[in-house]
Length: 93
Image (cartoon, rainbow, N blue to C red; front, side):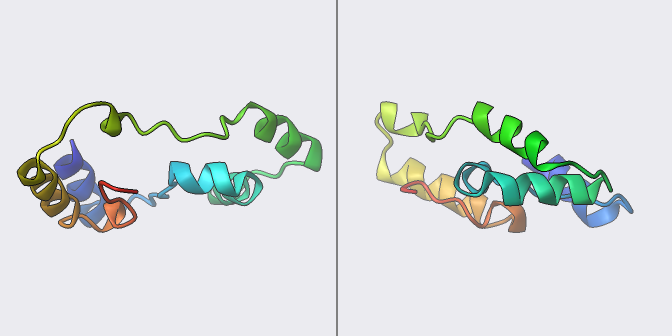
């Protein structure tokens, strides 16, 4: 799946906006504005307030619920490093 996204991003004329869940949680209004600006949509403060109320404020890191070997973590991180749009992610974050 990541390979497909990467290929589309590199070969398509489509404008693609990368949004990171962690940024949405930490700065919901700024990230929502970024999305609306991308689509050239205007919104008032009430819209942003309504949206931010329904955003879950906690990141669930399910990867910590199972045991990962050092070798597997290394393999995943090697794969992550191949794609610019995954640059914000690491196993331990």
